[in-house]
Length: 228
Image (cartoon, rainbow, N blue to C red; front, side, top):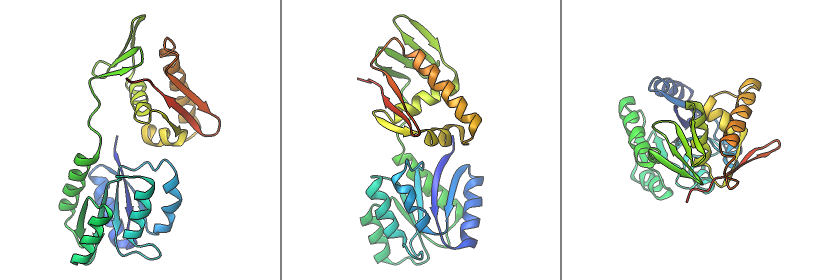
């Protein structure tokens, strides 16, 4: 699954080049020229793994936008872009919580290297080979869900969905968030597919009443998996 990156850059020429180059490097880029368009997203699931923010933008500058993002999503990885490499900007960005800082025009290969280094430091580690879920044990290498009453061989998609739900354990997650992140599309047919997979997971965990995947009409699902 591609890493989703939020790009805030008001320069259309530079933004176009940057988006195209990063997509060639297999990143999923959501580019916004107007930072005000990002504000409504902050109170949603915000399905990005990191952000690249231009410091000098109209209406809302990169530093102000970063503060707004970090207020809603603590420890969200950020890299600042600036046309000027002044010390005061570097210090301001670091105090806000920037993970890195690069001056424009930047070398694309250096930018990609910086992005990958940030992701290595900030993304959660790979899932453990064995995951305990209530009375069950999931062998992620063999796609095998084990229970004293029997074993279930999961499909790759079933396990991806289960691990994604575990990532959002003890919380509410919207249908759109799941579809956008796992299916990378959101239409009637993928929505129906999601319902089928959710039904399967409920059936798989039917031997443990403490495992709960509760549907919330018009919203998504409330997840509660005992993992200790």
